[in-house]
Image (cartoon, rainbow, N blue to C red):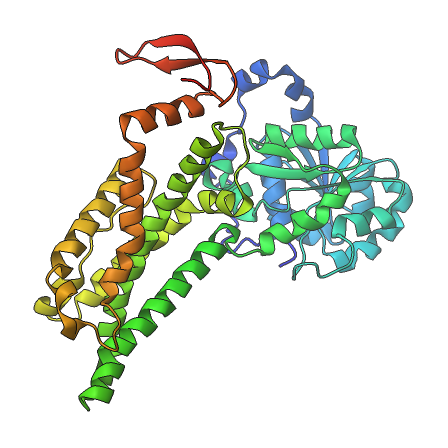
Length: 448
């Protein structure tokens, strides 16, 4: 994938309305509130290339109020693919008519632009390309383009925006446009264009950041990597544990063949365990963070990296917990009701909320009620291994007890002061909400 791919690009016949795409993203009121953007809206912008991304980019620029000139090696053949308001001409002519040019061609075709070296001198080239593999080349595409055209100013940008987002507008996709360049003025110019198009420009620094920017579209769900591996690890652990108890133990001690349980029953008894523990892991980092704040007496001390990463992945962990619970419900439909009801756990929380913690408490009560009598039955300890539900209770019970501890008036008050700016060993003015909803100021010290 060299460019953000448009899998559903539809060419509309001339005269057919294009819906919201025909409306500029910034109206007159936005221009009045941002007078600095008005000059950018009427400027001429060039595009070198005639692929899907180039067509989507030209369409969005036209409907955002820009004059667009498209440079193509076959202008007559490609003219009908672009909006009628866009001028489609040869590459040399397009390069002469504008100072800002989007280079929407493949990296291996950069050398074909060598004939335009003199025409492109002193202009701003916006490189929108991506690679097929992470770190496929020693240098980024933008740096390579800059080495081919040293007289130009190369800006890396728009590579994380898909062609579909350009067609549908930023409301249906990521609004952020990452931009990097060694020239601040060129970076500001491209940022203004992105703003007029309705996107949010993000300054990524110098052109050396282009390599990292080009790797972003190639990473599959980067925020999900750790949670997914965590869920898979827990699943393998609990599956192995349940396999030993439910299949291997009867086979060795009773000579009973229960391998038929492997695809359904063992999986069905594993999924709620994973969902239950994952739901507990959503709230455990909050408990640890509160413990750190109470220990150091301040909120300004940085958490360890592992805890900081854990806190950032709580949403994904909660969603995976819900996914495992949903799979458990599906698997339960494959079993008789008398079997499936034994493993049902309530897990409807997908975000950090009171509802999620209530689900954790109810699940814990359900598990304790279900396993109370079995916990004292020696026949349940196969190979001297306790039932799987007793293992799942360790983390949830720890979280619930810690939550109760932190809600004790003396601990809760101290923790609330810390989170409002109070620091141990220092006199700090802070403001706390009163019972009536009003705020009162006061002073505190380590003796309070």
